[in-house]
Image 1 (cartoon, rainbow, N blue to C red):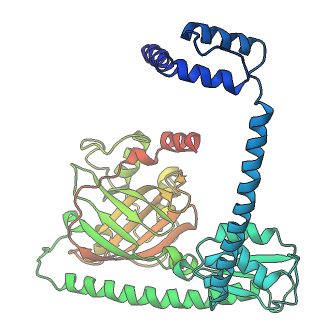
Image 2: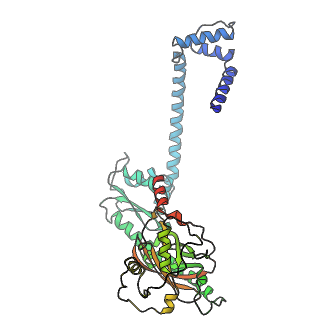
Image 3: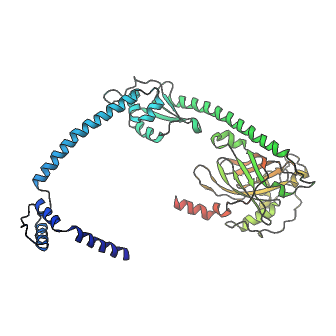
Length: 426
């Protein structure tokens, strides 16, 4: 309310400053309203107000309209010449370009006209019979929109990451735009695969350097040695989503009382995990803290083993047994008691890395475990269940750093409440 009053005061002040005798005379002359130069400001205002009431100020006088039309005509002539000159310059610069990708980056419409339209701007299939590949072309959405206006012209993507290529060509061409894009994708896949293998070899070298560094873990497994960063080899992700499979990591943070959490990035999904050596205690905590934080006192001191050896079962099999109280299924392969004692069970929460959708699930679809191969926790064999890919997916972790630090993410960031909030905001 105060701001409105101030604005009104300012408007009145501006009016008093602007509406002086010269301005009033100019308005009266513009609209052919008779007045005397000796009139006072008050008299001039009265004449102008009367002219407004009588409709004398509703339109421009004909002499002013004539002047405006003459100026516009002069401008249009000069501007048309300017536009024509600019077009000639642009076409000259375009003619000096040497390849389709440079031409498309310079001007999409001129590129399409050169290869796919005749001199009258109509589609012609005789100019370009083979699809054109545009590797690394950035303005894909603009190209798609422009190509859609040309009947029979198709655009298809091929390749991964920086190798992403747009293929432009006529439908039913030989080879087809889909065949060309598919071949681009195959070459790009193999290139990315070799790059990933080279990067992974460098990562393994870091792991080997860490393994051979001084350190004596002791004779018994201690969960404290699990803290640190692990490079992840997750073949299920690498084979299906090669573009999202580089630099996958799992960081196990420092303990907070009975709790130990971690952050993971598995290509198509990322989030956090909660770990415990006791699966009963972990499930009890998850049941009591569906939307809670990891507090230092949550969970009990441990549950007695029920006598069933589940070390040979996958995470989902173990969870089915715990949920129903049924006997464990037939053993798959013999695991040593030592391996079982080095096991960390986990529950996870996260989101898709592409669309950012929070993954909601139950204890079976968000479960897994890590089996460390030694007391120093330099490597583990893990299983995880992911809604996007399936249950009991194998992955391997190679330690590259002993520093885990505090996990800055929050369990509640991936709760049902967070999911509902993100859905409403989206």
